[in-house]
Image 1 (spheres, helix red, strand yellow):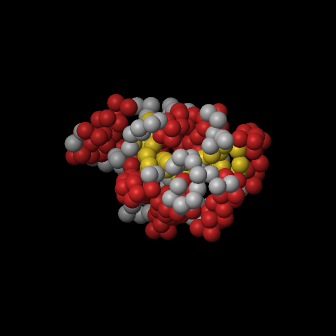
Image 2 (cartoon, one colour; image 1 turned 60 degrees about the vertical axis):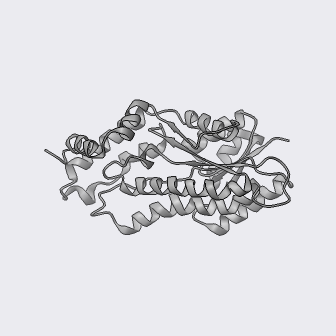
Image 3 (cartoon, helix red, strand yellow; image 1 turned 180 degrees about the horizontal axis):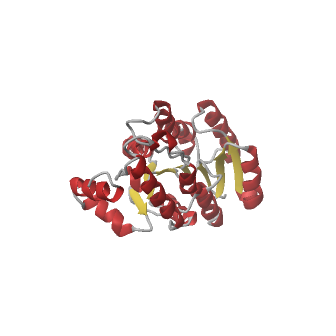
Length: 282
């Protein structure tokens, strides 16, 4: 029997890349989207290897209903994996950012992961009576989950939180034999970066951060253009789901040396480098 995986947030970007790779490797993918038009488009693209699930990860009732759909399709078999990918990126200086925007960032990127994991976790083998190997949870974090850029505080806060949540969850699920692996991408050529050009920095233009925001916006657009294809992250997700002894965390970045530097360089040194680059220090 073909093994099945649930991937959240598959309309574009990393989620789409995961569907492409996983279906190509013989998995059946249940992918969450929020719009019927995306469901129809992806069904046409991936055919019988893909089943759309229409729900928002912040909607617990919707997630549970989707899990019931998956349960019926599995017919007593375990789910091979849950890939918590759905997410948004909120940007802005923390001194001026609307608190509701910050709440929404955490609601989607952190609480949404808890909602999806509670809904689909039993199908991975936490529930007694299912047959088949135990499944795995793969949480999509970011290099921003270890190193935070200015004005990306809400996003990095959500990814730092996801790193801690993943560690707790991995240890809690030991009793069920379900592993939890983090995949942390660097820049990926996805619409989340294209949207940097749509971010309205107008509300902050008159603040002291105006010039620095202009610089970092241009930098983010450059990162997106030079980023990895989504399929590269899909390959890392496939590896995390299938290798016999997976690492607890996989970093996938177009600039691995830069990522290495950010993890070993003293924080105060990084502060000065970033501050001077953005004009926050003279």
